[in-house]
Length: 376
Image (cartoon, rainbow, N blue to C red; front, side):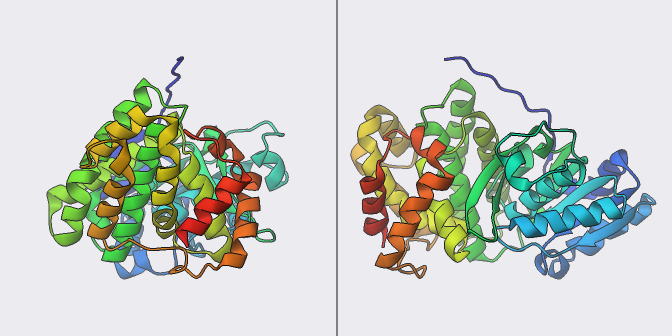
C-alpha cells in the first residue's frame, strides 16, 4: 500500500506551553480574530490570560464567542463575514473540537468566496485561508493537527466532515494544563472520542504504516490512563498522556480517517445536537460486534491493546472502559426512540457513505437499522 503522509502544522506540546500563545500569534499579523465558546474560557480565566498576552505583543483582537457544540454553517459564515469586515489577519481558536472546527471554517470562508456546499463538494478551487492558531482546551478531537472539520447544515441537520488544506493550523499549542478545568463528564466524552479516532483508523481499510504507529501508541496511552485520570483528576502525568493520545488521534484522522462509528454518530448529533462522544459511546459496542468478521486478526490485536483476549471480546473490552468512565449509555438514554431510526439510517448514507465504505464490514441499509436498534 502507498502511504502519503504530509503534515506541516507546527505543534507545541507540553505543560505551560500556553504561555507562548501571544508570541506565536504575533507571527501572523496584528489584528486577531478570537473564536471561543460562550462560557468555559471565560470561567477558567483563559480568555483573559490570552487577551493579556496579545496586548503585551501590541496586537488588536476581535472576539467571536457565539459557537456551541456541533457548529452550524450559519455561525461559520457569520464569523467569516465579521472577520473579513474587521480586516483580521489571523484566527485564534480557544476551546474544544467544535471551537477549533468553527475557527477553521471561519479562516477558510473569510478568504474563499462562494456557497458552502460547493466548497464542501470540492467544486471550487481552494485559495489560502487566514492563518490559524489552534489551542485546544479538551482532549478529544485532535482537530489541532489535521485538515478536517465537521459542520452541521442548519436547514437539513446534515452533519458532514469537510477536508481542506486551509484547515491545517500554522501553529497548534497543546497544553494539558488548559484541560484540567473540564468536568469529569466532559473528560469521559472527549476521551472516548479520541479513542474512537484511534480505533477507527486502526480498523479502517485505509490503515497504513503511519496511521498504525499513531493509533497503537494512542490506544495504549488511553487504555492505561483514561480511567486512571477519571478516578484521579489531579494526576498530571495522566493528563499529559491523555492529551497526547488525543493529538495522535488527530494525526490518524489526517492519515487514515474515520470509518463506521463516526458515520453512525454524525446523524445522531446532527439530529438532536447531543454530545458527540456520548453518541459514539451509545453505538460503538454494537458496531464493533457487527464488524469483527471483516478483519478478525485486527480486532484480536485491538482487543489485546484494550485489555481483552481476542476478537470475540473486543466489544466487551470497550464496554469495560466505558463503565470505568461512567459512559456506558444507550441511544434511549440520549432521547432517541424507535421512530427515529429511519431518519438516522437514511442520513448515514447521505452524509457519511465514504466512512461506511472503508469500514471492515460495509453495512447495507438493513444492517445500519439493526445496529441503531440494538443501541437503543
